[in-house]
Amino acid sequence: MQTIVECVPNFSEGRNLEKVEAIVRALLDGPDVYLLDQETDADHNRCVITLAGTKESIGEAALRGIGKAGELIDLNGHRGAHPRIGATDVVPFVPIAGVTLEDCVRIAEWVAEQAWQRYRIPTYLYEAAARRPERRNLENIRRGQFEGLREEVRTHPERRPDFGGPELHPTAGATVVGARKFLIAYNINLNTPDVALAKSIAKKIRASSGGFPCVKAMGVELPARRQAQVSMNLTDFETTPIATVFDAVTREAAAAGATVTDSEIVGLVPRRALEDAAVHYLKIANFRPEMILENRLARVLEQAGKPAQRGYSAALAGFLDAVASPAPTPGGGSAAALAGALGAALGEMVCQLTLRKQSLAAHHAAVIQSHQRLTSLRQRLQKNIDRDAASYEAVVMAMRRPKATEAEQAVRAAAIEAASREAALVPLETAELASQVTREMEALRGITLPQAASDLSTGLALSQAAREGALENVRVNLPAIHNPEWRREIEARMEALNQSSGEAADWA
Image 1 (tube, helix red, strand yellow):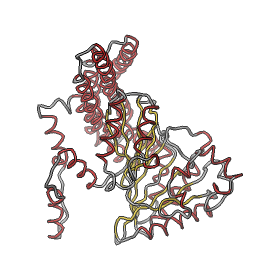
Image 2 (cartoon, one colour):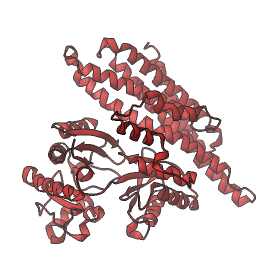
Image 3 (spheres, rainbow, N blue to C red):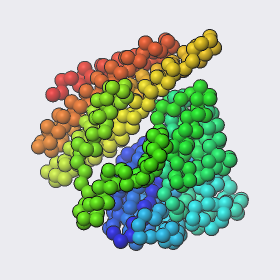
Image 4 (cartoon, rainbow, N blue to C red):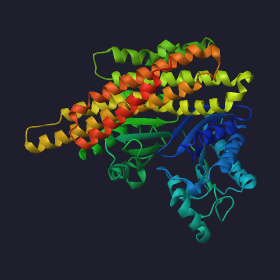
């Protein structure tokens, strides 16, 4: 493609995977548009889709997604941790190659107008496309969310959309469209459900409160994980790098007696951003991007007119070396999560092979549903690879706390207890997810491509190994936990898994 524009639409649906897949199909139902990434989050009840397309094709693709989301999502019944004003909440366009930010502004303006003309969904323009200074910041437009904005547009002219209105769409709300530089959606999870702490940290670090420039942050609750999260958008990672905000959140959490369990990137991230983080922590004085082997190799092969090749074993080598090292992390819990993710991935492959066979068309509807569930399970298990290592490291940090006085001993004991709970919860979640993978794989027996039976069996064996390994990592953390009610709850969840595994054992 001569021109490349990235589009990262955010939709207010993260729990019904059938709706998410329908929206993705609509986005891709046209020429010169490619799916780069797909993230769903049940706590946020939101999905983030990353597309790439030509300057001529990407706007029409976004409109297809806006229209489909308007059909499927009713904000009147939507609940989630992430603020939103629309079924399609925000649609940014980002220049990648052969286009300028001004080109993306023109695309955003056209999409915003067409969304109103075609679907009667009012639209706002933000960031570089904003027509009012106060609308450059997305949070100003989102103030009050769908419910509050729905009332304000009727009586406050300054709150009315740039296109359409004055009233919002009764079910799809409004959509914010804009153009911006590359943004990194970055979340840091704490070892506590105290959302007030996450909100306090977010206020200290975000630009609007006098914190770091180019940082937008909020504190949210993750009920399914029993955690609080500092959720951020880094709008210019060269001005404020990932490492800077990670260090700041870690310091603020420690000051309140909490720890960071892990962090996560939603969507895609430039390699440069991760290189900068590595240089920051390793304090490499003479670093240059050309020192990265893959960067140098890609440049050499590009100059030679050959595409760079990457083997699968090379991609795994770093993780396997880390497991094999004397360091305690990544360890058994991370390996269990990887096994479960591999099992789910094999199930996804079998589903996709089956969907290509018209002779199995009678089973396609069930296979599509299984594929969607396995995709979500794989994504969650993949995140647990790093979450497990981080949770153990938090235990080690808690044990290193000072203990010279009784007060210090009490603080240390509480920190060990909290960190040990998290270190038990993560592998327990891995075991539960792996059990769900097992059930999905069992359900596929007899309705999928017979030639892929060995792949199905391998996936099943991996998911069962993941469950067993993860449960062992739960058990090893229980002795450090002294709250009897909490232990009984965990043991009950483990017993439920043991019972379900007995039912699964006959499948072979």
